[in-house]
Length: 593
Image (cartoon, rainbow, N blue to C red; front, side, top):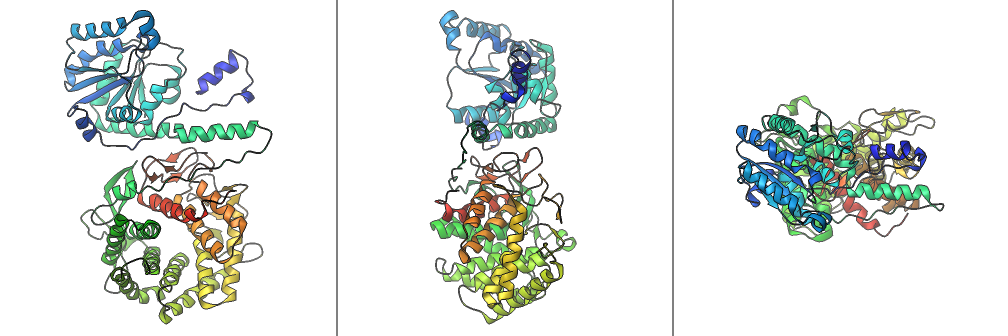
């Protein structure tokens, strides 16, 4: 479970390193909740909480904390120390409750009755996790220098507790200056000093909390299960196909990220960050995701969300038909709109409006007519688009809008934009480089998908041929064996290179899945179906870190896959990218690789 334990096997028991695989102690994912309501729920309002949990025995060193408390309370009188757990059964068998009784006597002796609370019970898992989340500092005071690993230590770390620990091997392996503080065994003075240091510095306490969750992310039970499956696949003689279970659809985080006006841009872990404001980009994608969900379920809350996100897009449209992108917390457009190229944002708005209009059979007339008015007002802006991805987004929107009623104006715009994309391709494509640019950048799948839509709309076989050739080229570059390796946002993919193994973002997986779905719809292909499932499984751990990117506890999606870790923030772009992918993959649920 730890590298220390592996070293013991190798050095003390002479086990070959090739026969050892380290899989960490599993932990539960948690919905990172605010401490204030949790403390209120358990009658601990306005308290600074220290805690420890597990089966109680003398080896846990709880007396060390009790001896440290008077010095801590002298500086922080609102501190409450929670001791959670039953006495160890074997201790009860041989000693009864002698150790617990000795702790209670020490509490009286030190006059700590109002600052220590026992929970002499086995708490249900979710209740235990809530107690850990409301904890400000978790204390691990084991007296055993040979304790290689601790499940209680792992659980506290995964719940974002700031850690103060005795120097067991597990702690020394995991904790650093940004995660926790290690103190000597049975040293109350060092313990009180460490606790006081953290309580005196809210910023440091928050750094420790965030870093603890980051350190523990790879230990989630979902990742532990995948690690075991990969180990079994390596060991057995016959090929083992790992099949991922499709997660249930959860909109918890989408609704949490949205207020009465629109969707916030960023989150800190899974807590919305209203100060980040809102963007047209995110709300346009949220509109598409909500439309997809409403089409699947006719869910009333998704219908209300459609209205909200559509109104947001209307709010962003200017008198000349152009859209602004960035809005602050006061619902005012920011200067960033003057500093950034807004072409892609305008294209995404057109895509979202067209997608909504395509659902005219299931949506009330009022709402798709509202979308049509906004879309029609943007036609002069669309005609002036020259950025490849902005044009591609607009083609998608116009293609979908045409599903309700064929429009000569829309057809004309699709032909204009499709021709521009076609000329771009013809200028850049050469030899075996069948692409629109001299390197692969972002939203790559969007380009052949839009090219195919333009070809089908205009009945232009040249457009269709370019769409097919460019998409086949892209697939050959981003699928390696049974895994998708999307182009890194850290370094674009130039000719004769492969994607970097970091900087992968959910939005790129989403674009790939949407493009695969459209190609399959028009040109059924079993290889594309396999690529579709492999792409979605990227969210479930089929990636270079073998770690989940979708968080089934929160319903959110991590913001990125880096070289050695995932980015635990669960912002708007990642969330709606996952949801669009999840709704799309629903039709392939019975397809088995």
